[in-house]
Image (tube, rainbow, N blue to C red; front, side, top):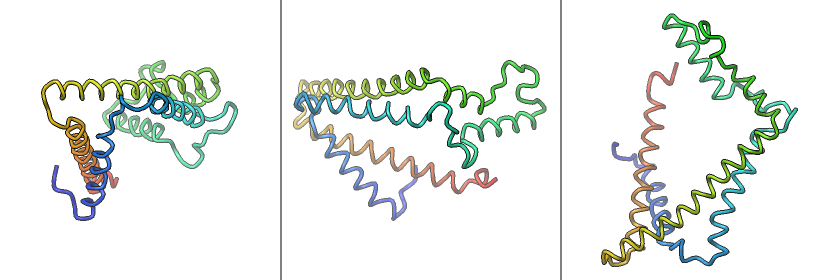
Length: 184
């Protein structure tokens, strides 16, 4: 990871300070209604947005604006396979998958849309509950080892991790934009 550019330093610092401040909040000590909201609201929003993103049955998919990333990736894989000397799915027609047919089948299946959105929402809610549990265990572990101000240490660690991940992502975006393969 190289040093961030001058125009990246302020957003990274602000993001790190915000993450550090939020990392000092003891999630397990929040009142029960707030803890419940912390778990349920992101899960419910995710479920609703996933359900809406999959589209209504019988509705034209929102892919008219251009190919979906999955379709573009499937086409690129087929082109790469052809350049190697083999065609995607030519030897095994049962192994080939038409992405558009798959997407249409998902849109027509109301039950699948519902189960998928509820499953993803449940995963997000479970992650929220696990975050509260981990927060409590980490604070208890730090306290049992005699660490002064464990919430402050946890907040600083959260901020540092946030800055490192954000800087790494910015690096990846910059490298992707500069690479000659992305221009083809």
